[in-house]
Length: 136
Ligand code: 5GP
Ligand code: ZN
Image 1 (tube, rainbow, N blue to C red):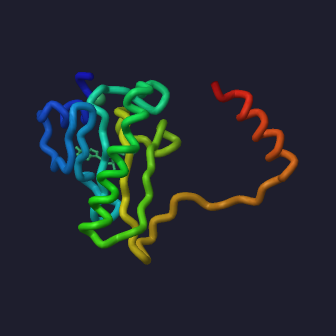
Image 2 (image 1 turned 90 degrees about the horizontal axis):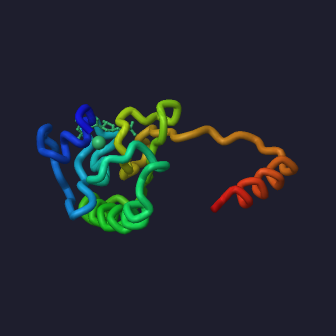
Image 3 (image 1 turned 120 degrees about the vertical axis):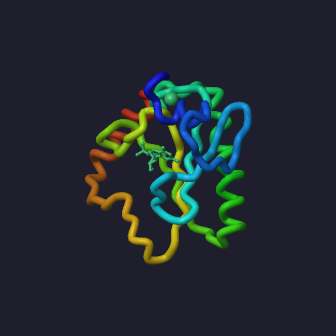
């Protein structure tokens, strides 16, 4: 993709600090880290979001993420992490090339991901069934 910033990083047209690379993925330090050690895992094949990520890359992604998260745990001496992946503008996606965030968490780092809401149990059961039936 010509105007994709992550494709440019993958092609070394834009510099980045690589922490991991294999035939399918490159992982780099985030330019504006949420916390120290914030890493982005980027599939080399351009896909915009989870919906057009290939099944093959989807399968392989978490093994790579696990390896990198384990390395960060060991070198940073941190055992709390969020793995986050944004799809769409409302969800916070700013770069339209699929990527997974690995974010080490520190006490008092003041990152808040969501606010829990009260739930209606009758709606929940119906919804669970609806989702179950929609999964292919
Ligand atoms: P999103 O909001 O799309 O889930 O995350 C995009 C991430 O990419 C952000 O955390 C942002 O800081 C990071 N980012 C954007 N441009 C660059 C860049 O040129 N280099 C690096 N290393 N990270 C970038
Ligand atoms: Zn791209």
